[in-house]
Length: 119
Picture 1 (cartoon, rainbow, N blue to C red):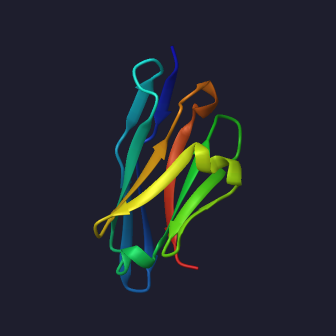
Picture 2: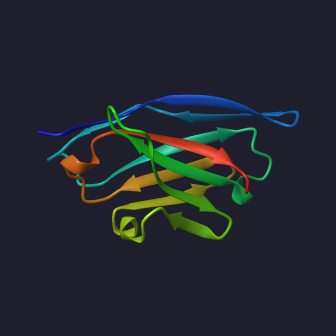
């Protein structure tokens, strides 16, 4: 049985006079019950969400966070092109970014984070 803990995260940044808050709900899955899972990053305070770059990272114990991808105004860009079969991301509405992991295996165990900034 595989348990993938996905941390609930709330982070705030100041951007000029605006305050940006990213929220994630805690999600965990057990292998065998699902082969695909999704998690949302809910953004508050980003004035032009569709132009924003939302990044996704994975961290495993005793290692630095690994950048997986970002989704920006032109679509998704991956750290490694082989990730495109495993990970995906879409923006929904004015403030939700959804990250999806497909074909879950023990190699996917870790804590996943979203982050935001403009280029």
